[in-house]
Amino acid sequence: HKKNRDRTTSTSYRQDESPPQPKAMNQFIQRVANYVANEVLIKGLANSKTFQRFALRADKHIGEFKGKTNQSLNETLDELHKTAAEAVNAASQSSNTGSLGAKATAGPPKPPEAGFAGFISAFGKEIRKDLGMKN
Image (cartoon, rainbow, N blue to C red):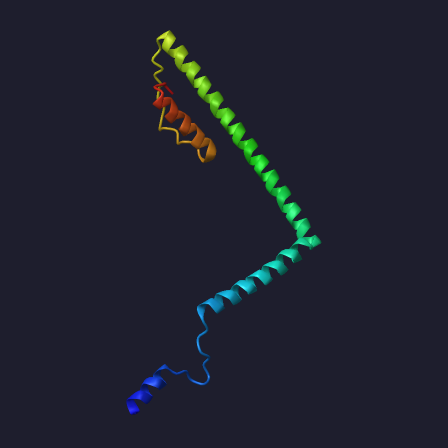
């Protein structure tokens, strides 16, 4: 009898503990709580004038930022296209005149440009190299 009693006490719960609830019940309660919280939150924000003003202002600022970014990108691409076209013209004119385009070096080399302008310049040089054009 003592061994049986040990088995039953090892699987029984202490009085201050509650038995574990089934997993499905926990999921159901969690879903109901999420649904109620979402409904209250969404309806509350939808009816809030302060939140509506915030949303409109945020949308306006995001739209302005996108417009400025697109405009800046288009200007940069236009400059890059113009520089590439000038390089093609210069390369074709120098090949027609027969000059080698040798440069005289006076002092240490010039450090590359920094920032986005430096990136565009280096990118243009790489493209000209890939196309077999002289700098």
